[in-house]
Length: 453
Image (cartoon, rainbow, N blue to C red; front, top):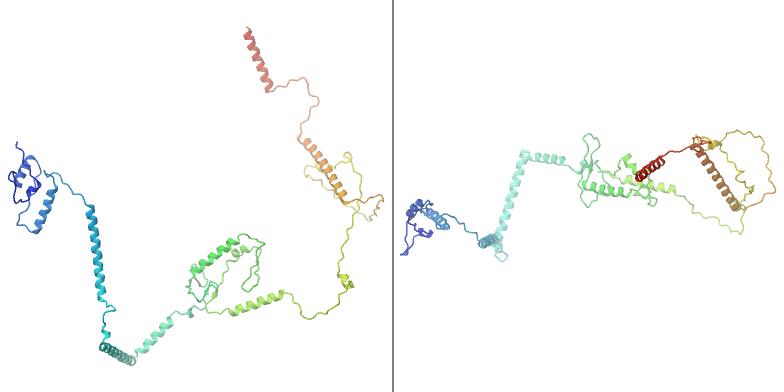
């Protein structure tokens, strides 16, 4: 089988001077050979009589053919050149920038510059312009007069005036705000700044009057209130200074002032629009001054009678003079010290189970005449220090004796089992250790016997 001739992609192009030693075949012949071999046939171009659109399609097809290999089997897509793409983007950006500059220059050309001559520089043009403006003003005045005459004839002017008056009446002015309460202190609202007031939110079923508030001022008041609550965490502070009101009077606080708001509700300052509170404030100031004067002690500024001071007290001065009291020493008798055997505590109260302290016997004594007590002459005067020491020693002894008695009573109460006086001496006591030793001895004895045998 003869080998098919090689057909290059460039063979489809028309050559002016083909080489002599190369065999050339037409596309139809090559397609026949390729069909016999089982290959894909080549694409056929359109004739020269096609239009320009046809030529473009053929150019694209030729380019596609050129991108194929020799046998027309593989289609190789060319790689994208990033350098060329970046250059194209730069050129596109420059063209857009130049276009924008061109548009700006066209707009600027329409406006007149300072150096260009104006029509008003010409005197004749300026005079004509002024005459034209005056003529237009006169024409406008004539038209206004004619319209007024027509309104007067048909009564349109009165209707317009009545409508304007109704609009003025319906207009919401400051007189409509008279009597509304503003729930802020009047000092916080100054004339320098404008304050926007809105109606306070309330429930549907609440029948309270409308109150005006400012949202920003409410936030400021809430912030100040939180700071005061943080400061007043300690209920009692002895070093805290007294608080004074705006008139200088000290404010009285209740014992549990931190619960006043929870009981009585939060107290907020407010004022009404359109009412002057200066008269009320003057009354409050005068009342506060009267209260201050009532609390103070009034002293006369009149002249006092001068007297000569003497070196000795008079009878009146002696009566006023307080004499210091003398200390009277107490006389105590030093009795005989008792021994431990002689001191017998009374255990009648201790024996009682119900109460620990002895019950005092309530006996009514009817004594008509109290006999006079004779003081013995053998008594000695002693210092207070010895008496104190003796009392301390006596108290220590009595406490020690009571402790011993209480310990004996506890022992008798705890030990309720009777003690056997005549216990058998020869009896054997069996317990776990004795039994263990006995069995161990038996085991050792048996082991010894087996070993010996």
